[in-house]
Amino acid sequence: MADLPNSLIESWTPDPRVATWADKRGFGPAQDMSNSALVKLAKAYKGKPVGLYIWESANHEVYVGISNDSVTKRLRQHVKNYDTANI
Image (cartoon, rainbow, N blue to C red; front, side):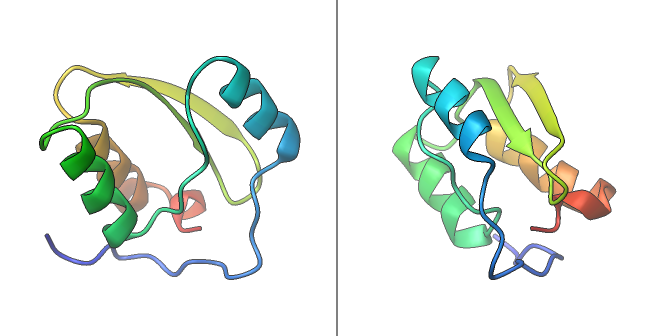
């Protein structure tokens, strides 16, 4: 898989309120938007994790999405299409 066309912000951390909300609803821990993190996620679900996901942007806006194909594919599209995904 090709590297993502983004620059991770080293000091960025998820909003603790979003993380708490997501954790209480079973979304799991926050992950960075890196190629290695997305590859690891895909491998954990035999290549194509599907379902609901939460994406928190660099300015802490929250998007809840759903994918019936591949969550990792959708997250890669977010990085490509939205500058605020480059966290």
